[in-house]
Length: 288
Image (cartoon, rainbow, N blue to C red):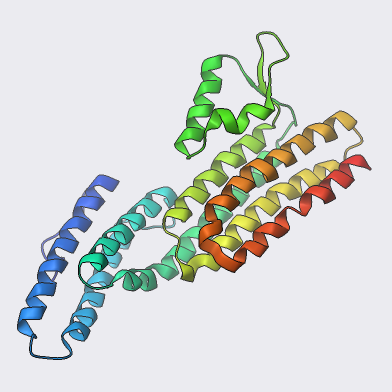
């Protein structure tokens, strides 16, 4: 039986090449499946033998992708795209022949957990720095084009940027375009939406706890910085501005992420629901 990876080399660091490479792997896997059926057609253990052999081939594939940094803690979005390709092709194979996706899920669980937690820590480190430098002033755009660019960035993340941000646009000042949100809020929003989108694509039950933990921990830490600022503020206008950021972060950003992931996370939604309790707590601090 020929290995599915014989004479196959990875040379280019791009998703299109990975997809082509994985297509080749699965094409050979299909050929090998039918070869197994012919070789062992009179044996009851045909499928068992194939799954054992196939598991080793999948292990080689994943190891090769990891060694070449196609699946790595160093490039989150790129790795998520490549893992999504693996799962998509595994689904196609499972539909046509026999279920093999569970093998990919088992073999990728450890590295996926590491990738998700590493990216979470990276976002946390960036969040700390941005809040440390925050001046708590609205984001100002010099031209309508720059605001449209922001809308486009949100659209790329699966959100209608115009509708999403419209309640926070300040249009009461002539020739000045402002969003009544702090720069750190918008920066966190884009990072959080990207993170949420990428892990949503590869979500499965075994890593559900890791995903829920990461999403909840990030939003809670983000809200914690608002809380600290409110606790140290005697400025009514500043408190009002911060509460607008809290409203956006909970009722727009987190609500969107919750609705996206809710169908997949099952009973773990209770951890999402508890996050909304922060609104009353922060409002009480702002009013004190």
